[in-house]
Image 1 (tube, rainbow, N blue to C red):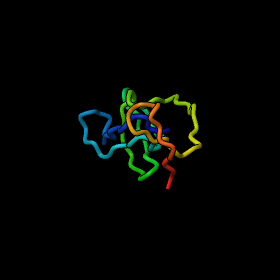
Image 2: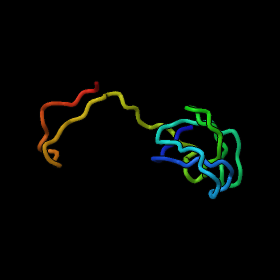
Image 3: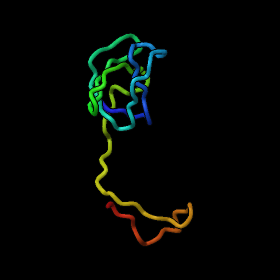
Image 4: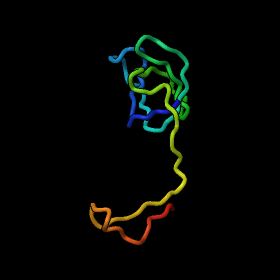
Length: 92
């Protein structure tokens, strides 16, 4: 599973008043290892933290619809699409 919010708190116990032991940031992945009423027990893939997140903070049936394959961006002088600069910012 993957986080699609900017961040999600990971609680020590399945209670929103419990201690926050870590946070998952946008794009981080985790595995579901259990379920409670309003919470899901997870294990973070990055650092193996285990804890509980609120079910409402994640989308369980998220399907990838787009793939980014071109890593560059157009530059503009002003917030107007007609004022495009010819140069492009390329990935490093």
